[in-house]
Image 1 (cartoon, rainbow, N blue to C red):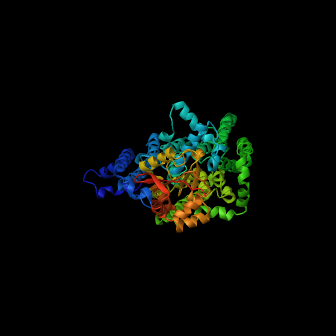
Image 2 (image 1 turned 60 degrees about the vertical axis):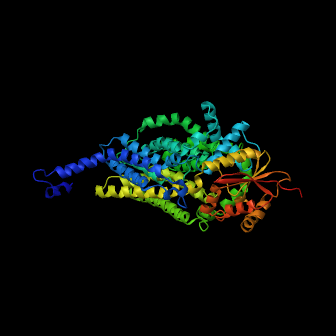
Image 3 (image 1 turned 90 degrees about the horizontal axis):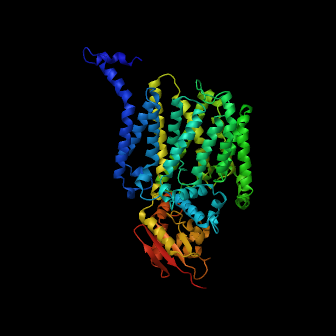
Length: 598
């Protein structure tokens, strides 16, 4: 390069190369210094976080500048290490582990309780299945877990083998563990296409920098997605051709043909585990395998796996899950006739949300659109990618977006299942050699930082409602202790940590999911709305209403109900003679009410 030629003009007499040489040495040593500095800075930054100060942007508003400096340092250090062939692969792995820890261990280190209400609900399902030694009777809205119980059966076995009484202790670390476990199948997938570590590790970093959807907590979806990526990696490794220029697949040639039959039992086992654990993931897998089987050259490798996925899914849906299919068949048919509504269902409803959440929604859309556009640009600029199975795997989930809304979440799930493939396509665009390498290096580092910025908006912005104080957890436990079997448990929203415990023993009412008439009455007269919602209860059956900061924060952030709903309802009940406070602390209150005989 021509850069060192200008050094004599600024160097001292007799030492014309000292400046450039020192600069090159410093640059070469930077990856080894930046990683420990970034990790230390990250850990130190967590000491001064005021969780009570979170507002409509969640952790983004309370994490100190040192945290963001640590993330930026880590990204720059990784960019330097990735392009320096002298840096050993172990250092790249360490950078990836540091990134995963900074993103996914931070809430677990900061919060004294389990994060996210759905994680608490899944703990309640696990407890109920263990208590009932199998399917849970009177499950009502939780009955879907009886029909796809694989995740809970597995965790029940873990508890039995380890002697633990509850999964609460390790559920808090599920996001970190899930993302760490994803590393292995992602590496397997990317190395099936190229052994160039620039592409493989670049794709890994992009995946973790753009995975903002947050389906990595203690849930069947996280478990099934991990298995999905593993099956995808095993199948793609069997595909012929489609290697990156200069890349050699480890299982090439006749050896690859010999390994197909050996991998098939493992693939079928993983498919069976997916089918019994989650209702959506098998459909995503079938779509992806169908797309991979379209080229004639791939069919020998893909069709056995596709046949297995189809057989398992049909057998399960027509037997164990038959009741769910029958109950929802009409909704499935109606969804097929409104594809436009399915697509936009996850994008609507921003008007009532907190201002910060409106910004977050647009950032999430921008990040998702950026990932899609970069992947498309990669297919245009890197024609060899079209010979791999990754473009088909990325596009395959899209038909499900048209077919069903999945409660407004389908657009996010399609992004989730397409991201592993899109990440490699983007890496091939950003990290392949080309002219002006220094400018390309700076540009790719800028893209990585921009992706991470978008990720933090999507992943951390709802923490005001995802974080629960010890006082809220204590109140929910007190609710379970106070409410006798058969009583009615009422909440404004479902954002209560442990509020679903023993769901099979109580009737449950969630006011924000009640009829439109009840919700409207709740706005004008909170007490009258509550009485209308509990009117079905038999005389003498006690009702217990829990109000906590998490419900108020959910109303504020999402606009599910006006932000002051919880406060107005609490004020009305404090003045109502038939409601008795049976528990109160700074973060929650429980009221008891017994309907009178008419």
